[in-house]
Amino acid sequence: MDTSISINTPISLTAGAVSEIKRLMTEPDFDTKSRLRVGVKGGGCSGMTYVLGFDQVEPEDELFSIEGIPCIMNKSHGLYLYGMEVDWQGGLNSRGFTFSNPNASKTCGCGTSFAV
Image (tube, rainbow, N blue to C red):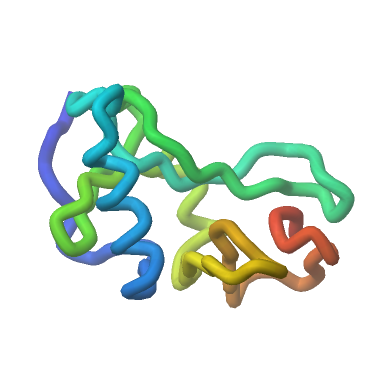
């Protein structure tokens, strides 16, 4: 398995997302061997759903780091996610991670589903 870090990051994180992810990484039960997985999976009302969570490195993963956050993404997902920005919304009406994807031709009202 190649454990080199990519110089170009396929996605970006806003300051709010970085802050929330780093907060989650300080939780007592956080597995320090895991990395932030960014990806897609089939399903959702528009065809594909975003994946964002902590996971272990798989052989087909690309490794990169954003502001000290170790990240992984399946190499084949870059086609769908390259240039995407992840933000954290902490308001009362809208709380959670949001995705701004320039590759999406159509998105769903839930904000976690898209089509290319």
